[in-house]
Length: 138
Image (cartoon, rainbow, N blue to C red; front, side, top):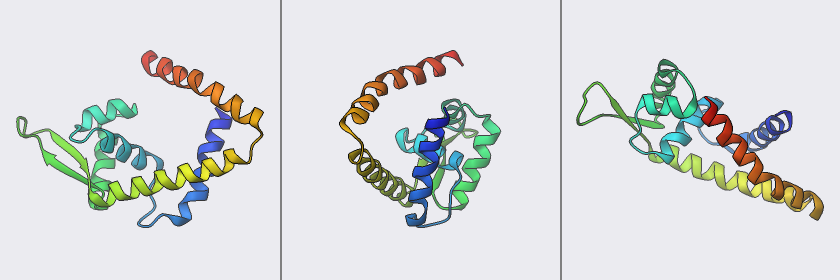
């Protein structure tokens, strides 16, 4: 966990200076990623996906709507519920982040030995299964 946290932290630190717009916290970015992958998702479903309380996600939604990165639409069949969609600005920001992250990590992996690259590649399926196992346990 320490190694994975360190990897995420150093990637964020290296990419942050090139990001346009207001800085976002990790939970805000994670919510944008969930909504980008699931256009029209509701607050409760997003909260479940993020393992957060509904009211916490509702607060994040309000912040991101105010920042112009998220649209909240009234659900056509239940006026109490909302459907969430990322804005064009948020989609562009997420795409730019993904491209820059991929380039940064590819460059760093290119500097590793073949044995290290093979070890990382061999570990990825097991790490994916660990994520699934932890998600299903909650």
